[in-house]
Length: 351
Image (cartoon, rainbow, N blue to C red; front, top):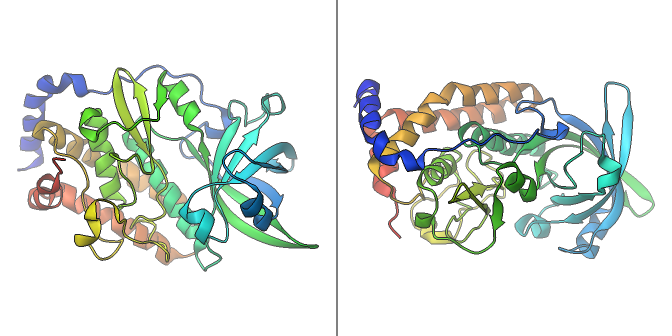
């Protein structure tokens, strides 16, 4: 089926699925930290003991520290913060653990952090070569989903000077990192609420579920479950349930040295490497499936523009090229009726 026929096929069925169309509400002003999709990286400095962070923090216990950030080319400012380690795998297996930050509202008023009293920071996992490039590829994934869906986490790339306290010594690390907004901000932006109970994927919104499933296939990710709400947050807005994905370091796009295929839903029986794609989405009406397919094809150039905007920050040209080739392979599947049928339509789950 050529594109013209595909368009006609979709338009015929669109009227029957008007209820699945995204209603884009007017949103409140986005705080300065996340003011634009393709921002320049924010320069920051952090100082703490990674050992103390692992040992003395949990979901409710934080340690005090400071965050310094560059306001402009020559001026730095600092904020009091509280931070803790977060994450399951990374907390137990990584040298650099992901961070959860709390910032006091009175101290962030009038700064670029205003409106963000809670933030997450994703750091590299290991001290290996090209570790910062892996962060860039994970950041790339967040930006891809931002292109496709209005229901996403806002992110900001950061360049961190991490001064690690090791007894009486300080060890300096220069790292790439990702600021991620809190789920409370996402819910507020869409005049919705976060849902903590599990909702079966087939009871979730059809259009956004397919956008999510295609996205996970795009980046070659198996480390998620919309059924079990693993690496997904559930939002209720516009009288529908919407899953919002996060945490993509195990994906084929990132292709980290420590990445493994998820043990969820017997995926290991289908693929042997994280760089192999397998579709985990649920069966939906074919008109809707083709509608989302066409939407991804329509945003192909925009996604490649996202990648190209990040090329200058990569240490290894090989890592960048590998990522670009991986995404190009996805669009080859989207553009081929046969490959699309075999890789996605025929793989859709029913339960």
